[in-house]
Image (cartoon, rainbow, N blue to C red; front, side):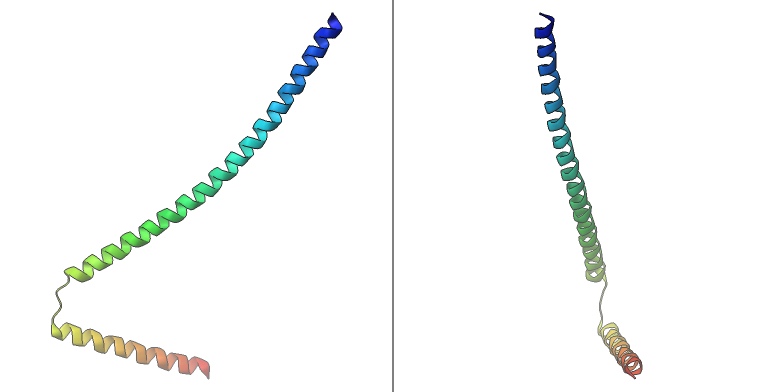
Length: 94
């Protein structure tokens, strides 16, 4: 009788330890998945911020009035920057 009770208890302990191992493994898998998803979420948030900034810049550019004088001045400025960059590249190549 006591022997039967001990066997039942041993069986319950064995089942409980199996269940604990299973739940521990499942917990680790879920933690890993959560970490992966948090990383993905962070990346998506960065992409959203990047596109928000692009939209802001686009709106600023679209709302800025452009006249031919500004356009010519901007073109000359860009050409000057390009020439300066070419000079610096040539200097660094020596």
